[in-house]
Image: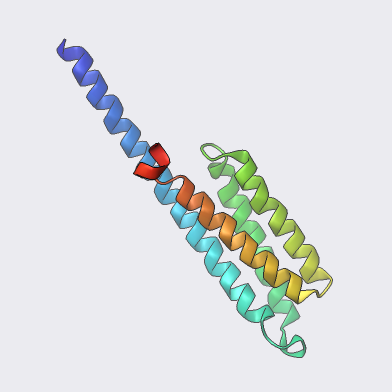
Amino acid sequence: MYKETIICIITVIMIIAINTITENYTSQSVKELNGKLEELKKEISKEERDINVQFVKEKVTEIYKTWDDRYNILTYYLEHNELEKVENNLTVLKSYLESDEYAEASAKLDEMTFVLHHIEEKNKLDLKNVF
């Protein structure tokens, strides 16, 4: 009788602990990527002649590297179709920036920020997500 209760309590504690760890990692990943995306957006929001193309290229490379580092761990516990949305948006963003289409790149940045925020909110341990 007591064994089952103890096992249930330990299981619930482990679930909450693992969820807290994964939620924190997801939140850190989203915060880091959003910070870099915001820096990029500030740069491409300038007049086209004032945009530092070298900075934009370095920032995109940095975002790709950060995403690759985080992606490998996020795939263990997040839905792959959500991660693929970010991956697709990142690829389209890079192509827009390479062809100097900054207005389209800005829109893609907004979409990518939304998807990242959605991923973060979707995986929080919250009553609306449980039921």
